[in-house]
Image (cartoon, rainbow, N blue to C red; front, side):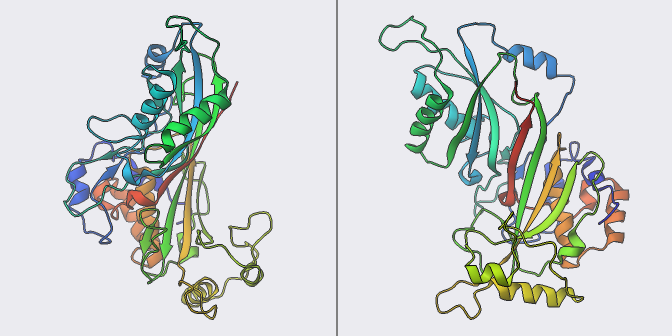
Length: 371
Protein backbone atom coordinates (compact mmCIF):
# COMPACT_ATOMS: atom_id res chain seq x y z
CA UNK A 1 0.00 0.00 0.00
CA UNK A 2 2.98 2.31 -0.39
CA UNK A 3 2.57 5.73 -2.07
CA UNK A 4 -1.22 5.40 -2.14
CA UNK A 5 -3.38 8.35 -1.17
CA UNK A 6 -5.52 6.34 1.23
CA UNK A 7 -7.29 9.42 2.56
CA UNK A 8 -9.35 9.48 -0.65
CA UNK A 9 -11.26 6.46 0.61
CA UNK A 10 -12.90 8.77 3.12
CA UNK A 11 -13.39 11.93 1.03
CA UNK A 12 -17.10 11.39 0.46
CA UNK A 13 -17.82 9.71 3.80
CA UNK A 14 -19.56 12.70 5.32
CA UNK A 15 -22.10 12.87 2.52
CA UNK A 16 -22.80 9.13 2.25
CA UNK A 17 -25.88 7.84 4.03
CA UNK A 18 -25.24 5.22 6.73
CA UNK A 19 -27.65 2.86 5.02
CA UNK A 20 -25.25 2.53 2.08
CA UNK A 21 -22.68 1.06 4.43
CA UNK A 22 -25.21 -1.48 5.67
CA UNK A 23 -26.02 -2.76 2.21
CA UNK A 24 -22.49 -4.02 1.65
CA UNK A 25 -21.44 -7.62 2.19
CA UNK A 26 -20.73 -8.43 5.82
CA UNK A 27 -17.09 -9.41 6.48
CA UNK A 28 -17.66 -11.14 9.77
CA UNK A 29 -20.56 -12.30 11.95
CA UNK A 30 -19.14 -10.02 14.64
CA UNK A 31 -19.29 -6.97 12.41
CA UNK A 32 -21.75 -4.51 14.01
CA UNK A 33 -24.23 -2.46 12.02
CA UNK A 34 -23.71 0.54 14.26
CA UNK A 35 -21.66 3.41 12.92
CA UNK A 36 -18.99 5.13 15.03
CA UNK A 37 -17.96 8.72 14.47
CA UNK A 38 -14.33 9.77 14.69
CA UNK A 39 -14.69 13.06 12.83
CA UNK A 40 -12.48 15.38 14.86
CA UNK A 41 -12.74 18.77 13.19
CA UNK A 42 -9.75 21.06 13.37
CA UNK A 43 -9.81 24.83 13.02
CA UNK A 44 -13.05 25.29 11.11
CA UNK A 45 -15.30 28.28 10.82
CA UNK A 46 -17.15 27.31 14.00
CA UNK A 47 -14.08 27.40 16.21
CA UNK A 48 -14.17 31.02 17.34
CA UNK A 49 -17.92 31.18 17.92
CA UNK A 50 -18.14 27.85 19.76
CA UNK A 51 -15.07 28.55 21.87
CA UNK A 52 -16.36 31.96 22.88
CA UNK A 53 -19.69 30.52 23.97
CA UNK A 54 -18.04 27.91 26.20
CA UNK A 55 -15.46 30.30 27.62
CA UNK A 56 -16.03 31.38 31.19
CA UNK A 57 -15.37 34.98 32.24
CA UNK A 58 -16.05 34.37 35.93
CA UNK A 59 -12.74 34.74 37.81
CA UNK A 60 -14.06 32.46 40.56
CA UNK A 61 -14.44 29.56 38.12
CA UNK A 62 -11.54 27.22 37.44
CA UNK A 63 -11.28 25.40 34.12
CA UNK A 64 -9.78 21.92 34.35
CA UNK A 65 -8.37 19.81 31.55
CA UNK A 66 -9.30 16.20 32.29
CA UNK A 67 -7.85 13.10 30.61
CA UNK A 68 -9.96 9.94 30.82
CA UNK A 69 -9.66 6.30 29.78
CA UNK A 70 -12.67 4.11 29.13
CA UNK A 71 -13.90 0.84 27.69
CA UNK A 72 -16.50 1.86 25.14
CA UNK A 73 -18.48 -1.38 25.08
CA UNK A 74 -21.30 -0.23 27.34
CA UNK A 75 -21.24 3.39 26.16
CA UNK A 76 -23.11 4.87 23.20
CA UNK A 77 -20.12 7.09 22.52
CA UNK A 78 -18.45 9.95 24.33
CA UNK A 79 -20.78 12.91 23.65
CA UNK A 80 -24.01 13.46 25.56
CA UNK A 81 -27.04 11.79 23.96
CA UNK A 82 -30.67 11.60 24.99
CA UNK A 83 -31.62 8.35 26.75
CA UNK A 84 -28.16 6.83 26.15
CA UNK A 85 -25.28 6.10 28.47
CA UNK A 86 -22.26 8.15 27.36
CA UNK A 87 -18.81 8.99 28.70
CA UNK A 88 -19.69 12.67 29.10
CA UNK A 89 -22.88 11.74 30.91
CA UNK A 90 -20.99 9.53 33.37
CA UNK A 91 -18.40 12.26 33.99
CA UNK A 92 -21.01 14.96 34.48
CA UNK A 93 -22.83 12.79 36.99
CA UNK A 94 -19.61 12.14 38.92
CA UNK A 95 -18.67 15.84 38.95
CA UNK A 96 -22.18 16.74 40.10
CA UNK A 97 -21.88 14.40 43.07
CA UNK A 98 -18.43 15.77 43.86
CA UNK A 99 -19.14 19.53 43.80
CA UNK A 100 -22.89 19.48 44.44
CA UNK A 101 -23.93 21.30 41.26
CA UNK A 102 -24.30 20.42 37.56
CA UNK A 103 -21.45 21.01 35.12
CA UNK A 104 -20.99 20.94 31.35
CA UNK A 105 -18.15 18.86 29.90
CA UNK A 106 -16.64 19.32 26.45
CA UNK A 107 -14.64 16.49 24.82
CA UNK A 108 -11.68 16.74 22.48
CA UNK A 109 -12.75 13.88 20.23
CA UNK A 110 -16.11 12.38 19.41
CA UNK A 111 -16.60 8.61 19.45
CA UNK A 112 -20.37 8.42 19.00
CA UNK A 113 -22.15 5.16 18.23
CA UNK A 114 -25.50 5.70 16.56
CA UNK A 115 -28.24 3.21 17.31
CA UNK A 116 -29.99 3.37 13.92
CA UNK A 117 -30.48 0.10 12.06
CA UNK A 118 -29.19 -1.97 15.01
CA UNK A 119 -30.28 -5.59 14.78
CA UNK A 120 -31.81 -7.14 17.92
CA UNK A 121 -29.06 -9.76 18.33
CA UNK A 122 -26.17 -7.34 18.02
CA UNK A 123 -24.44 -5.88 21.03
CA UNK A 124 -23.80 -2.18 21.52
CA UNK A 125 -20.02 -2.16 21.13
CA UNK A 126 -18.31 1.25 21.06
CA UNK A 127 -14.98 2.90 20.54
CA UNK A 128 -12.48 2.84 23.42
CA UNK A 129 -10.03 5.45 24.67
CA UNK A 130 -6.63 5.11 26.27
CA UNK A 131 -6.70 8.88 26.73
CA UNK A 132 -9.51 11.17 25.66
CA UNK A 133 -9.44 14.74 26.94
CA UNK A 134 -12.19 17.11 27.99
CA UNK A 135 -12.51 20.39 29.86
CA UNK A 136 -14.90 21.43 32.60
CA UNK A 137 -15.53 24.66 34.52
CA UNK A 138 -15.93 24.34 38.27
CA UNK A 139 -16.90 26.96 40.83
CA UNK A 140 -16.18 25.64 44.28
CA UNK A 141 -19.01 26.68 46.59
CA UNK A 142 -19.03 25.76 50.25
CA UNK A 143 -21.50 23.00 51.12
CA UNK A 144 -21.60 24.17 54.76
CA UNK A 145 -22.14 27.83 53.93
CA UNK A 146 -24.13 28.07 50.69
CA UNK A 147 -23.05 31.08 48.65
CA UNK A 148 -19.50 31.16 50.01
CA UNK A 149 -16.96 30.67 47.21
CA UNK A 150 -13.83 28.72 48.16
CA UNK A 151 -10.43 28.46 46.42
CA UNK A 152 -10.39 25.95 43.54
CA UNK A 153 -9.62 22.32 44.27
CA UNK A 154 -6.14 21.06 43.46
CA UNK A 155 -6.06 18.83 40.34
CA UNK A 156 -5.08 15.77 42.40
CA UNK A 157 -8.14 16.27 44.61
CA UNK A 158 -10.39 16.50 41.55
CA UNK A 159 -8.94 13.30 40.13
CA UNK A 160 -9.37 11.27 43.32
CA UNK A 161 -12.87 12.56 44.06
CA UNK A 162 -14.28 12.10 40.57
CA UNK A 163 -12.78 8.61 40.30
CA UNK A 164 -14.37 7.74 43.63
CA UNK A 165 -17.83 8.37 42.21
CA UNK A 166 -17.02 6.83 38.81
CA UNK A 167 -15.86 3.56 40.40
CA UNK A 168 -19.04 3.37 42.50
CA UNK A 169 -20.95 3.22 39.22
CA UNK A 170 -19.97 0.90 36.32
CA UNK A 171 -16.22 1.46 36.73
CA UNK A 172 -15.52 1.41 32.98
CA UNK A 173 -14.29 5.01 32.84
CA UNK A 174 -11.48 6.55 34.89
CA UNK A 175 -9.82 9.96 35.16
CA UNK A 176 -6.08 9.52 34.55
CA UNK A 177 -4.90 13.15 34.69
CA UNK A 178 -6.16 16.63 35.62
CA UNK A 179 -4.60 20.04 35.01
CA UNK A 180 -5.66 23.64 35.59
CA UNK A 181 -5.84 25.63 32.35
CA UNK A 182 -6.79 29.21 31.41
CA UNK A 183 -10.50 29.99 30.88
CA UNK A 184 -10.09 30.18 27.09
CA UNK A 185 -8.41 26.77 26.74
CA UNK A 186 -10.71 24.49 24.71
CA UNK A 187 -10.13 20.72 24.79
CA UNK A 188 -11.25 20.23 21.21
CA UNK A 189 -10.00 23.29 19.36
CA UNK A 190 -6.64 23.53 21.10
CA UNK A 191 -5.74 19.95 20.20
CA UNK A 192 -2.63 19.81 18.00
CA UNK A 193 -2.70 16.14 17.11
CA UNK A 194 -4.65 12.94 17.71
CA UNK A 195 -3.47 9.35 17.59
CA UNK A 196 -5.77 6.38 17.03
CA UNK A 197 -4.90 2.71 17.37
CA UNK A 198 -6.78 -0.19 15.84
CA UNK A 199 -6.24 -3.75 17.13
CA UNK A 200 -6.73 -6.86 15.00
CA UNK A 201 -6.34 -10.41 16.33
CA UNK A 202 -5.57 -12.98 13.65
CA UNK A 203 -6.01 -16.72 14.05
CA UNK A 204 -8.60 -19.49 13.86
CA UNK A 205 -9.03 -19.89 17.63
CA UNK A 206 -12.15 -18.32 19.24
CA UNK A 207 -11.52 -14.93 20.79
CA UNK A 208 -10.53 -14.94 24.45
CA UNK A 209 -13.06 -13.73 27.00
CA UNK A 210 -10.51 -11.05 27.95
CA UNK A 211 -10.44 -9.76 24.39
CA UNK A 212 -14.16 -9.78 23.61
CA UNK A 213 -15.25 -6.39 22.25
CA UNK A 214 -11.63 -5.17 22.55
CA UNK A 215 -10.36 -6.09 19.06
CA UNK A 216 -11.46 -7.20 15.57
CA UNK A 217 -11.09 -10.97 15.31
CA UNK A 218 -9.91 -11.98 11.84
CA UNK A 219 -9.80 -15.81 11.48
CA UNK A 220 -7.57 -15.64 8.38
CA UNK A 221 -3.80 -15.16 8.43
CA UNK A 222 -2.72 -11.58 7.80
CA UNK A 223 0.34 -10.65 5.73
CA UNK A 224 2.13 -7.92 7.69
CA UNK A 225 4.39 -6.83 4.83
CA UNK A 226 1.46 -6.41 2.45
CA UNK A 227 -0.44 -4.28 4.95
CA UNK A 228 2.37 -1.86 5.79
CA UNK A 229 2.15 1.66 4.36
CA UNK A 230 5.65 2.95 3.70
CA UNK A 231 5.05 6.69 3.65
CA UNK A 232 2.85 9.32 5.31
CA UNK A 233 -0.49 9.67 3.55
CA UNK A 234 -1.48 13.23 2.70
CA UNK A 235 -2.97 14.80 5.84
CA UNK A 236 -1.95 11.83 7.99
CA UNK A 237 1.33 12.33 9.83
CA UNK A 238 1.60 8.58 10.45
CA UNK A 239 -0.09 5.44 9.15
CA UNK A 240 1.63 2.17 10.00
CA UNK A 241 0.91 -1.46 10.83
CA UNK A 242 2.96 -3.37 13.40
CA UNK A 243 2.76 -6.72 15.12
CA UNK A 244 2.79 -6.73 18.93
CA UNK A 245 2.39 -9.24 21.72
CA UNK A 246 -1.21 -10.42 22.11
CA UNK A 247 -1.88 -8.92 25.53
CA UNK A 248 -3.13 -9.72 28.17
CA UNK A 249 -0.85 -12.72 27.75
CA UNK A 250 2.50 -11.80 29.24
CA UNK A 251 5.62 -13.41 27.75
CA UNK A 252 7.98 -15.56 29.75
CA UNK A 253 11.73 -14.94 29.67
CA UNK A 254 12.07 -17.84 27.22
CA UNK A 255 9.47 -16.32 24.88
CA UNK A 256 11.20 -12.95 25.00
CA UNK A 257 14.51 -14.51 23.96
CA UNK A 258 13.00 -16.79 21.29
CA UNK A 259 11.00 -14.01 19.67
CA UNK A 260 13.70 -11.34 19.89
CA UNK A 261 11.78 -8.65 21.77
CA UNK A 262 13.58 -5.38 22.46
CA UNK A 263 14.22 -3.99 25.92
CA UNK A 264 13.16 -0.51 24.84
CA UNK A 265 9.74 -1.69 23.68
CA UNK A 266 9.01 -5.16 25.09
CA UNK A 267 5.56 -5.25 23.51
CA UNK A 268 6.82 -4.78 19.96
CA UNK A 269 8.55 -7.30 17.73
CA UNK A 270 12.13 -6.40 16.83
CA UNK A 271 12.54 -4.74 13.45
CA UNK A 272 15.89 -6.49 13.13
CA UNK A 273 14.37 -9.98 12.95
CA UNK A 274 14.80 -11.71 9.60
CA UNK A 275 11.61 -12.12 7.57
CA UNK A 276 11.20 -15.48 5.77
CA UNK A 277 10.57 -15.38 2.03
CA UNK A 278 7.20 -17.11 2.27
CA UNK A 279 4.46 -15.08 4.01
CA UNK A 280 2.53 -18.25 4.84
CA UNK A 281 5.61 -19.81 6.45
CA UNK A 282 6.28 -16.60 8.34
CA UNK A 283 2.75 -16.52 9.67
CA UNK A 284 2.93 -20.14 10.81
CA UNK A 285 6.28 -19.63 12.53
CA UNK A 286 5.11 -16.52 14.33
CA UNK A 287 2.02 -18.31 15.59
CA UNK A 288 4.13 -21.15 16.96
CA UNK A 289 5.96 -18.62 19.13
CA UNK A 290 2.75 -17.34 20.72
CA UNK A 291 0.10 -20.03 20.56
CA UNK A 292 1.17 -22.09 23.54
CA UNK A 293 2.46 -25.05 21.54
CA UNK A 294 4.60 -27.25 23.79
CA UNK A 295 3.96 -25.12 26.88
CA UNK A 296 1.69 -27.61 28.61
CA UNK A 297 -1.96 -28.33 29.27
CA UNK A 298 -4.29 -25.39 29.87
CA UNK A 299 -2.26 -22.81 27.95
CA UNK A 300 -4.54 -21.01 25.50
CA UNK A 301 -3.53 -20.81 21.86
CA UNK A 302 -2.87 -17.19 21.12
CA UNK A 303 -3.65 -14.98 18.18
CA UNK A 304 -1.31 -12.78 16.22
CA UNK A 305 -1.98 -9.19 17.20
CA UNK A 306 -1.66 -6.33 14.73
CA UNK A 307 -2.01 -2.65 15.53
CA UNK A 308 -2.75 0.03 12.93
CA UNK A 309 -1.56 3.45 14.12
CA UNK A 310 -3.01 6.61 12.58
CA UNK A 311 -1.80 10.04 13.67
CA UNK A 312 -3.00 13.42 12.40
CA UNK A 313 -4.40 16.74 13.54
CA UNK A 314 -7.92 15.71 12.59
CA UNK A 315 -9.75 12.85 10.92
CA UNK A 316 -12.61 12.56 8.46
CA UNK A 317 -15.84 10.76 9.23
CA UNK A 318 -15.09 7.01 9.66
CA UNK A 319 -11.58 7.54 8.28
CA UNK A 320 -9.65 5.15 10.53
CA UNK A 321 -12.19 2.34 10.31
CA UNK A 322 -12.42 2.66 6.53
CA UNK A 323 -8.64 2.54 6.20
CA UNK A 324 -8.40 -0.50 8.46
CA UNK A 325 -11.12 -2.26 6.46
CA UNK A 326 -9.05 -1.88 3.29
CA UNK A 327 -5.75 -2.74 5.01
CA UNK A 328 -7.26 -5.93 6.44
CA UNK A 329 -8.44 -7.05 2.99
CA UNK A 330 -4.94 -6.46 1.63
CA UNK A 331 -3.55 -8.53 4.50
CA UNK A 332 -5.85 -11.47 3.75
CA UNK A 333 -5.16 -11.26 0.01
CA UNK A 334 -8.73 -10.27 -0.87
CA UNK A 335 -7.44 -6.98 -2.28
CA UNK A 336 -4.30 -6.08 -4.21
CA UNK A 337 -2.60 -2.73 -4.67
CA UNK A 338 -4.42 -2.41 -7.99
CA UNK A 339 -7.74 -2.97 -6.24
CA UNK A 340 -6.90 -0.25 -3.72
CA UNK A 341 -6.05 2.14 -6.56
CA UNK A 342 -9.41 1.37 -8.15
CA UNK A 343 -11.19 2.10 -4.85
CA UNK A 344 -9.32 5.37 -4.49
CA UNK A 345 -10.11 6.43 -8.04
CA UNK A 346 -13.80 5.70 -7.46
CA UNK A 347 -13.80 8.32 -4.65
CA UNK A 348 -16.84 6.82 -2.99
CA UNK A 349 -17.21 4.98 0.29
CA UNK A 350 -19.47 2.36 -1.27
CA UNK A 351 -16.57 1.17 -3.45
CA UNK A 352 -14.43 0.39 -0.43
CA UNK A 353 -14.34 -2.74 1.68
CA UNK A 354 -16.71 -2.93 4.65
CA UNK A 355 -15.60 -0.77 7.54
CA UNK A 356 -13.76 -2.34 10.42
CA UNK A 357 -16.02 -2.70 13.49
CA UNK A 358 -15.87 -0.13 16.26
CA UNK A 359 -14.70 -2.58 18.93
CA UNK A 360 -11.07 -2.52 17.77
CA UNK A 361 -10.69 1.27 17.65
CA UNK A 362 -8.92 3.15 20.45
CA UNK A 363 -8.33 6.86 20.81
CA UNK A 364 -4.76 6.68 22.04
CA UNK A 365 -3.66 10.24 22.72
CA UNK A 366 -4.57 13.90 22.21
CA UNK A 367 -1.59 16.24 22.07
CA UNK A 368 -1.61 19.90 23.17
CA UNK A 369 0.74 22.83 23.53
CA UNK A 370 -0.11 23.18 27.19
CA UNK A 371 0.40 26.51 28.96
